[in-house]
Amino acid sequence: MKKLLNTLFVTQPDVYLSLDGDNIVLLKEQEKVNRIPLHNLESIVAFGYTGASPALMRYCAERNIAIVFLSMSGKFLARVVGESRGNVILRKKQYLVSESELLSAQIARNFIVG
Image (cartoon, rainbow, N blue to C red; front, side, top):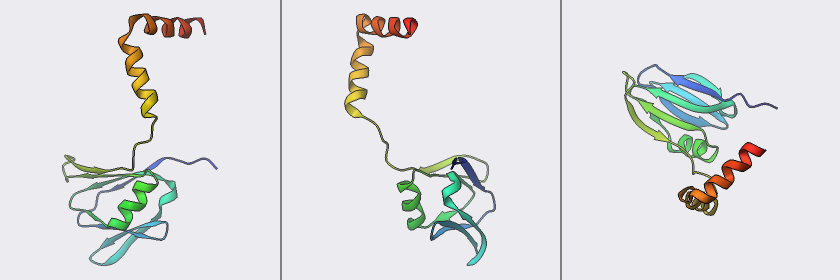
């Protein structure tokens, strides 16, 4: 099944984001406004004074779903993301190779030759 990397934009002010099972629930004045499955989302962007439950933030962080908080005018406030994945040893080696003109030239030749 193809994952459609969708973004949920929350533009209504004073909405609280919470978790219910595998769904994000949008609450306004303690009443459910909307319920959306999280498995279809890549990120959540919230404008204005919006709160999010710690359970939702943890769920999203574990599944690499970013939550971004912006002011009503769109000014960046905060971003919650999961852990970065990558090979530290490989990255260090790449930086070392980038410092050497000889090794960099060899790699460039391999790209050109194919």
